Each structure stands twice: as C-alpha cells, then as structure tokens.
Amino acid sequence: MCLGIPGRVVDMVDPAQHLAKVDVNGVQRAISVRLLADTGLQVGDWVLVHVGFAMARIDEDEAKLTLDQVRKMGADYVNEIEAFNASEIA
Image (cartoon, rainbow, N blue to C red; front, top):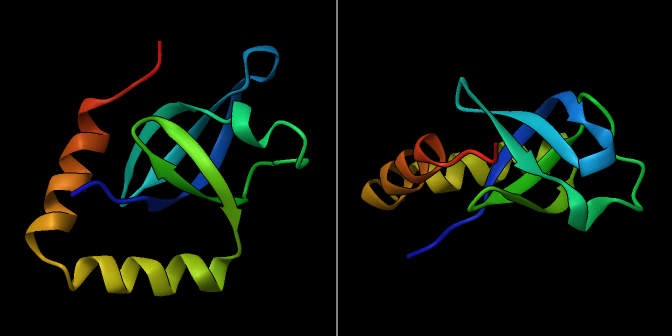
C-alpha cells in the first residue's frame, strides 16, 4: 500500500528546481514541490508527501488528523515512514 504522509516544509533548498526540505516524523528529506509550484508554498506549510513528491498542500489540522489516522494503521505507517527515510532527491 502506498500512502501520502504529511510533512512540514522546513527549508526551500533550491527554489529554481522546486526542491524543499520537509520534516516527516522528525526525519528531514529534500523532496520535489514542483506540483505545487503555483501555490505560493512557504516554509512552515504542510504538504502531503508521496515517494519524494509533495502532492498537495494541506492545513495543520488536516495534517494532524491524517498523521493520527496513519499511525493507527500500524505496519502500513511504518512501511511508509521507511520508504520516506530511504528516498531523497539529490
């Protein structure tokens, strides 16, 4: 199963290449935010991350609710966090 997990943008690593660093569960990775290029994405915003890409911009309440629900999924949550930890756009 592939999930999208909430992450908070902590740095715009390379705005020209649409790369941002996000924090997911205490792990920070550079991801592509190209799909959200026209949304005015900023440091502090929450995004839904899947396989190294930000798929959608979400608010903090939605992020917290989603994280709570994903954690309840047990193994699927662990697998998604492991996949996030293993991925990075260089």
